[in-house]
Structures are given as structure tokens and as C-alpha cells.
Length: 269
Image (tube, rainbow, N blue to C red; front, side):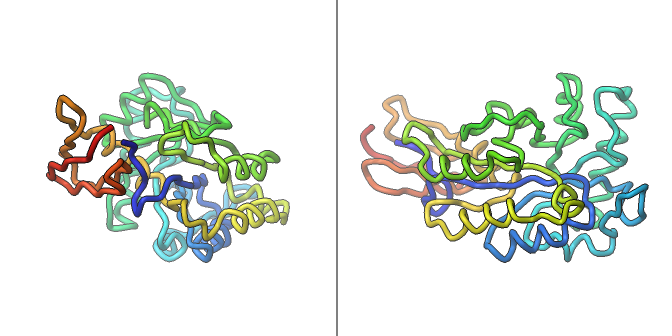
């Protein structure tokens, strides 16, 4: 038996983009038009005004610009988490959550570490403040889900290896369980140069794939954490789903969906 993604998809693809600059408008629409989803990590204190050469999305347009995508935290002012006192870090994260939740009307439980800077204390505080996952900037070049979602290492930045890794992902080896490709970056890297060709080519290559689940960071974290919470009989043939999430499995009985609270026979191993 193996877990698979919703709708029996074998693989998942997600994107993560930081800072909330105006170039997110074009990037969010690019993903949306291709049927893909992304997570945009915003600094709520920066929304609206120009700062040096940077121009950010206005608070009043957040809902529309990121429609269909996920909004997550990046700290109120993009301060380095490991240089702050515990009280400063609590304010930097909690006030960002509160501001973004007020703008979106929903829960904001995702984070990416500003400057990619974190340690055990930062992870502990984030968890206690209700953060379920946080992305680092340490590319793995691989497709395994993270061991710890509060130190979620992406596959890659959208650099020169993006297309190469995308091709590998399309033909990912069978030994990968719940293979995941996670791409991160900043939209200003495209906007300032005026060159969107790499991300546009990648989206064109990866869209409309029947075996790929296109999901936000939060959707993927929630699903994989649900699979890890499943309970089995002593012989491994019966599964109980104690979570609030439908969990999909592939077994000798075929593709099965185990609904929240359900106990189901899943067949021989």
C-alpha cells in the first residue's frame, strides 16, 4: 500500500514566492491561467508604499491579486528572525498573521523565514504561534516531502536548473513516495530584469499533467501531515483515518479513499 495525492495523483507541484512586490500580479495570473497554485509570503508592514526601488502590492488589492492562491507570513517588516529577541520575534510573526488574516478573512498558518534565517528557537516560537510550516532557502534538488514542515527545504530556486529538475520530476523514480517538487523565489527577479522566459517556459512544460496535483504549500502540508497520522491494524490491512482530511491510498484493492473518521480494509500488502 502507498499513499497517493488527492484524486489519485502520484506527484505534487507547488510554488512559493516572497515579499509581495507588484510583480506578483503577473506571476499570480500566470499560475492561475495554467491551473496551478502558489503560496505568496507577504510582509504586511510593507504593503502599499514604495521603499527605495521596491514597490509592493497594496493592502486593498491582496484578495484579488492572490485569488485562488495562498497568502502566508514572511514577518511584518522582513526582519532577520535569528537576530531578534523572543519578544520581538513573537511580534514580528504574530502581528503579521493578524494583519494578513484581517485582509483575507481566513486563517494564515504558513511562513517562510526572512533571509532564510532560522534556528531551533525560531522554529519553536513559530510552532507555538500556530504556524504549521515554514520554508527555508536550502534547495535539495530532490523530490522527497520534508521530514519537518517547520524546516521545509524546497527543491530549488527558479534558477538555471529549473527546467532540468522539472524534466527529472516528470520521470521521477518509483521509489519516491508522495514525490513533491517545490519551487521558490521572488517575482522581482523576473520583473526587474524584464525576463519572464524561464518561469513561463517551466509553467508551459508542467501544466495539464494528469498525474500532478497542483496545490498550495498549506494544502500539501495538511495532506502529508494527515497521511502521517493514519492508524493501522496490527496486520497492516485495516486503516483508520483520525484526521479531518480525505486520504487516498493505492493498494491491491485499487485506489481507495479513506474519509475522516472512517475505518477501512485496504487489502493485502
